[in-house]
Amino acid sequence: MIYLKLFISFLKIGAFSFGGGYAAMPIIQSEVVDTYHWLTLEEFTDLITISQMTPGPIAVNSATFVGIRIGGIPGALVATFGCILPASLLLIFLSWMYMKYKKLTILQTILSVLRPAVVVLIAISGIKILQSAFGLNEFILENLRLHMLFIFVICLVLLIKYKKNPIFVMVLAGLLNLLYNIIFL
Image (cartoon, rainbow, N blue to C red; front, top):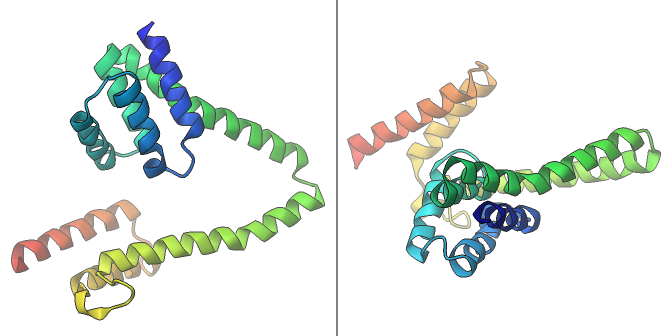
C-alpha cells in the first residue's frame, strides 16, 4: 500500500509541477509534509538543500530521497518512476506527433516563430545568472565581483577559442574561485 501511495503522490508531482524545481516545491511539500507526513518541515528543508546540491531535477531527487526513506530501494524506484512517468509519456507523445507532422508547413512556421523566442528566454536567463555571479544588481557597479568576471573571461576563452572540455572548464572555474577565496578572504 505504501508503494502505491508513493507512486500516486509523485505521479501527481511529476504531472503538475510545470516551471521547474522551484515551482514543484510547494506541491512536493503539500504531498510529503502536509498530506502524508513522510517528512517534517525541517526534514523537507534539508531535502530541498540536498536536492539542490545533487545533479538532477529537484522533483526526481526528492522522489528518490523520500522513496528510500519510506520504502527503501523499492520505494525509491516506485517514487522516482511515478515522478518521471508523466514527462516521459508527454515527450513520447510529442515526439511521435512531431515525427508524424514535421513536414506540415504550419508546424514549421510555428517552430520558426518559436525559435527566436526560445533564444531570447535562454539569453535572459543567462544575463540574470551573469548579473548574480558578478554582483550586478540592476547594473550597479558598487558590488561588482571582478574576480568572477576574470574567471568568466578565462572560461569563455577556453571554451570558444581552445575548445576545452566543459567539465574541465567548470572544475577550473571552481578551483580558481576557491583559490581567490583562500587568498583574499
